[in-house]
Length: 480
Image 1 (cartoon, rainbow, N blue to C red):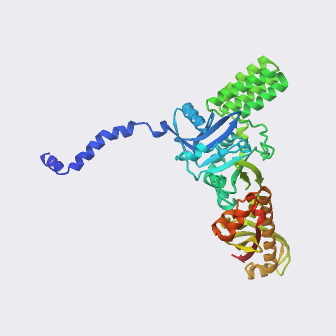
Image 2: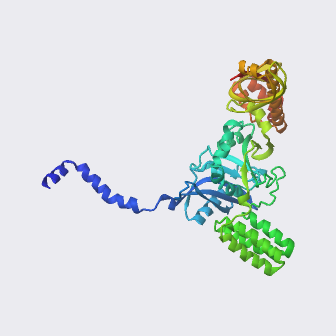
Image 3: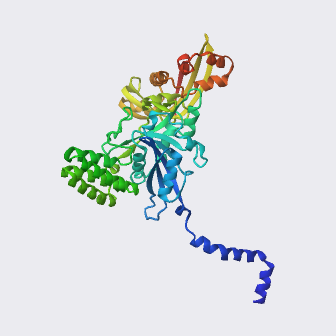
């Protein structure tokens, strides 16, 4: 024992180590986890309800389970601005909110009818929110959208940011991040593209039309189910059925139960079918009971769809929806857009007879050059496409096809070039119509300086920059 203490005195660091273990091990074992005081937010949804901002937070709840699926919950709160709504959400949860893990910011379509930048000012200023957060909009309310995103992990094994991330690299002409939105907003062109994900029901019918600006059965008040139930109650049995159905739905929703909205539906319906005050009250009570069971109706039938569309934003407002054909045309000059499909029809040559061929872009090289000719700027684009034949529809000579390793004939190259030019011309026409230079021709002219900058400065209306530039597109195809 004496030898042990003698050796112990020779190694004082061992004593320090033991003291650390004695004092800090119990604290580490018995202290509560950080998630007890802080909520981890993975997505943020922003809506306008009347004159208030409704902030919805998709929060991650650490829960041990045998399936390894994440447990999420949508918490909503209203306020005069985002900072106020976030403060109210923290009070409701009893936790501080951290946004450093928020990978997606969703804006309801009603907000895009006005300048969205002042509303998003808080998100652009706080350091905890990453500038690379994906910025998207939808055809519905952001709150309903986030609730529908809770089932992505179960149905598809995806997360919300994964559903949009594929098109950031392969379909969109630019990254639709919060940072890129502000860069476009404060640039000379004041325009940018924002990602778009659509919320549809089970049979792929639209929940709401973004172009018409109508929400359909979806209400940004946070009780979409109760709104529908209240209306049916009013039609059949008077206003009291509607009122009870709504109150039941709202009370359940305030406790963060998705089933509360289901309760609002069944409560309003029961009240309407009863045909009077008593029926409405009974329906409201039944709705509350149904809501507590946690069964959903409308939300469980909705799903999120990505079909390659983007929203053109100018001066912070929605200008127009660009469909996938327009986006594909813009991506002709986007070197990141690998994986695009190009289909050409009625191919007649030594190998094919009236065939439809589909090629995938495996490699792409884009060279841009700006020059002046007769006082007008010309943007020349030389695009080299490495193509792979992936599908053939129609008659073909298998022997020649295999022996020549799908060499691109001149007829096929001409068809592909014509298809690319047609698609690109349609995209430029759309941008000219909306006076939105999202392809950054303005930046190219300003950086080139000299006569190009002088030409730009002399323009009476700088928004018409695309109407004053001629485009030349040269397509070079080769087989991969």
